[in-house]
Image (cartoon, rainbow, N blue to C red; front, side):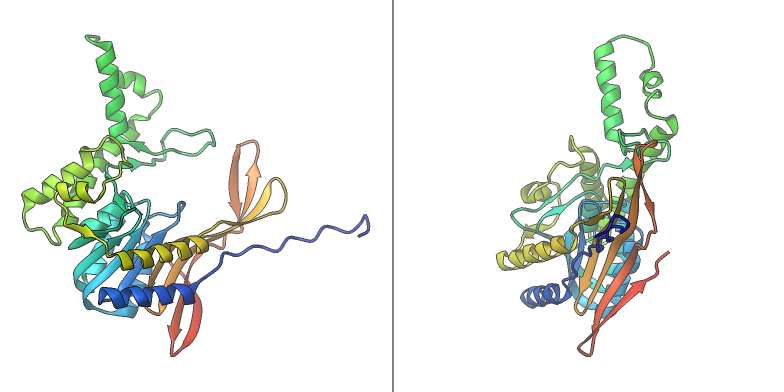
Length: 338
């Protein structure tokens, strides 16, 4: 190569799409379950978000209505209000909803399970508390100059600790706290906590007629546990009043295989051009049913702006993408969701 030649641009990496293999596993699991299986999976950087409702509708329209629908859930959470919308949509296509949980099912994903008639949990499965944390436009900044989430439980614990150590001091603890957390953020988090309890009660009402029982479950999930990520295992879930049962070992094995395939699809596919420029491809959310798979793929350039100490995005072609099988032929398309 001569001194005037420029280096070749690296080929942009793409994550694998394993539709044929995931469909085979879904078919086996549905046969064992005796009913249709729908999957909802997030990688660690994905979340329960509003566009998931449109994606779920694409899957449900394809499979139609059934007496019982089985829902495989693996997610670290997201929006509780979206959880309610997703359950409402699922309930329009079935009389009985069974949530299958082989792994983590946290926060808003736990809320989705509350709308199911039964929750089946594998040996490595857990639910979590659903106390609300909020990422507000006025939230504090972290070391990377990004806004952080603030939870009401964390704020309350700071206040309680301050009062316990100050004893009879009359100084208002909020005066010091406001130096770090904007008062509007504290007000918004308090409001979100009330919303979280209401959402849980609404979800439980799909199959629990006793309002007192539903309120007790909602209160426990919102205030009983010392950590938002506290793992609620099968026996603990049963103690707080949820209808839970062990997941069949053969079904659990198939769902773990599905998770392995989805994890392969959801791996980061980063192409580095130099120290400050890169291209990122990554599948974040996957929803799938018989003969149809819908997923959201991040597809964007990244540029590091050193004066702000953060990465910014350029040339963002991220989108929802759909694969379906019609008369034995695969069709791929972009879903335009605004």
